[in-house]
Image 1 (cartoon, rainbow, N blue to C red):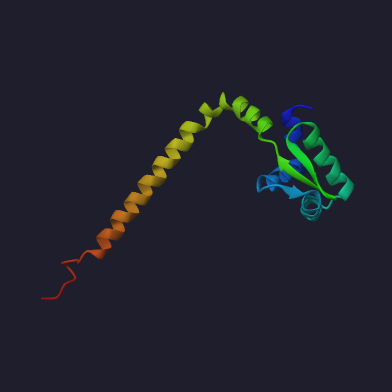
Image 2: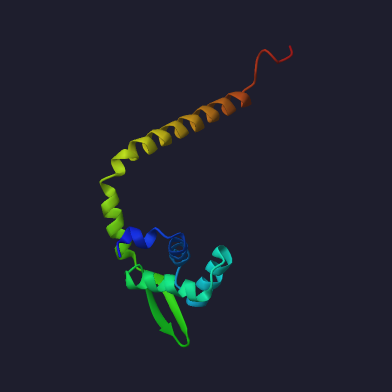
Length: 124
C-alpha cells in the first residue's frame, strides 16, 4: 500500500495524531477513535494493523497490553517527497509572516504613542 493510501484515511491519520503524543496502549487508542468516529473495536484494530504493516506504527508487548508508537521513517519519506512542492507555498507563508510582523510592529508603535502625553489634551 502506498504511503498516501495509508494516510488518506481519516481514522488512520487520527490514530497517528494520538500516537504522536507518545506511546499509547491499544485500548486507549481504540477508546478515543471509537468515540470520535463511532466505529467498532475490531475496525480500530484493523486500522492499527494497516499502520503497523506499512511501517507507520510500531507495537511492543507490555504484559497483557500492546503499546503502539509512531515510526517516523515513513513520515520522513513523505516529507522528502513533499519537499519538491514546498516552493509553491513557502514564499506565501514567508510573506504572511512578514505581514504579521509588520502589523505587530505598527500596533506596538501605536500603543507606545498612546502612552505618551498628548500636548493638545494637557491643561495649562
